[in-house]
Amino acid sequence: MRNCILLAAALLALTATAAERDFNFGEYSADQTPSNFLSTVSGRGKPGEWKIVMDEAPSAMPTRNTNAPAMTQHAVVAQLARYPVDEHFPLFVFKDDTYDDFTFTTRFKITGGAVAQMAGIVFRYQDEKNYYVLMASVLDNHFWFFKVVNGVRSEKLIGPQIEISKNQWHEMSVQCEGDHINCSLDGKQVIPMITDSSFSMGKVGFWTKSDSVSYFTDAKVTYTPRETLAQSLVSDTVEKFPKLEAVKIFAVRPGGSGPVVVASENDKDMNRPGGKVESDVINNGRSYFGKDKKAGTVTLTVPLRDRNGDSIAAVAFTMKSFPGETEDTAALKSQTMLKAMQPRVTSLEDLLQ
Image 1: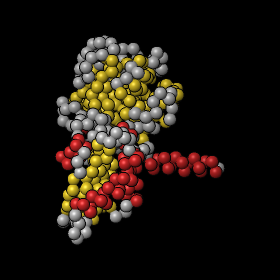
Image 2: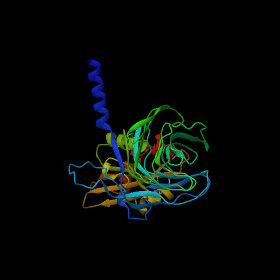
Image 3: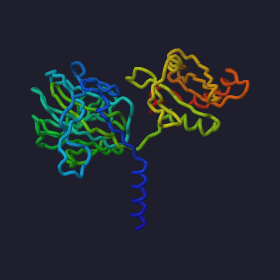
Image 4: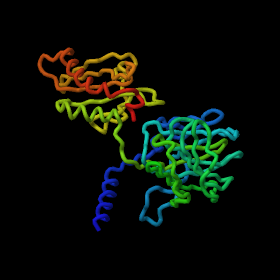
């Protein structure tokens, strides 16, 4: 009985701390490419053409209205390029986050292709030469898991022969917990649990092959939030210096075009874009002093450096000002806080993980 209670408590705690990230393609207009994804390619050829299109898809939300239409218009992301070469794998990778233990689910529909008719998800993605794939094939009638390590695909393709209907929506899902990988199709685990430790964490995204035309929608990741080094630095600084009004770390994520908030004492600030000040701090290692008389605060934005002394991020310390506050006195306080952060930082990659 005691073991059952402990198990129930553990499951409740896991549920309470779980977070969910929905990929809402409805935020983009038709024919746009979602900006928070990286379009790249594995193998031969150039990246695919990933665009938003409108399509009829099953509603993701249950309804009590029996007269409601079973299919509704959805904004879906589609790979539309037709490059009829065998060793050509367009990838569309979510740029903002890296996951270790998670469940990644998406609906998919395969609509065309002469050489191949495939759709899949890529996960624990490191780069174009290192990742896992779960994919479905109409022409081969297969649902397969495989991995790519140093650009070489695993010889063994794991999964059953199963009919994948063309021009119909299906759902695929992968759950990763440590080195255990569970793969499902249309709500059923059709591949026995896989044990593989090649990659312990990475990014997620979509995968196709050759000239496949494939649609994806209702994609989401459920995961246990993992505190990055950047967020740990912020949390520790706020705890050590309780009189701070705010502290934020800005950095340029891999594949990003400009600095965004990668850590903050306020969750609502996350991923908000920086401006010229933050860009100059990162690019040129300058420091900036700002004073808000109405709020009664001062802000010092200073560079955070890697092990080589290069500026890789900008830290903005916002503090209450006092009568006669000068840039020098504010800088002195900010340097005390920065010195507590700096020894823990080795690289931008480590800062964001």
